[in-house]
Image (cartoon, rainbow, N blue to C red; front, side, top):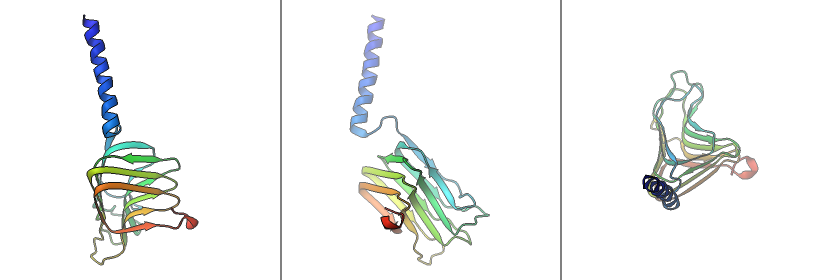
Length: 172
């Protein structure tokens, strides 16, 4: 009798994983969270390996005190054959300040990487806000050097410009 109950429990767990995967995406996907300051080159969070995420939350509100680049980027997705899928909430915001910064990017997809966001009714908030108040052209979404960005959702807020380069000049 004990053996039979254990077998039924195993079947129930496997069936639950199969059903949750089919309805809600990857049941084994995890969240990606980052809230630190940039490195000296202005880079924030980096994803350079293929992975599925439920939710992404990246907040860049502080630059490295010795930052040398005039650009800061909250989230960079890069690398040939890197495919990142997000199926839940997305919150990416860059409000970093530094004397050398004249451009804040929120999401930057590059080097043949692909970022898919399919959030359904979950909130997507992507913002690149210039801390100096000058209204400069900060990029909420940037895809260059054959990087690809795909966003689908019913509750999307984007603050900042969208920067896609012509495919003949290295972008997509």
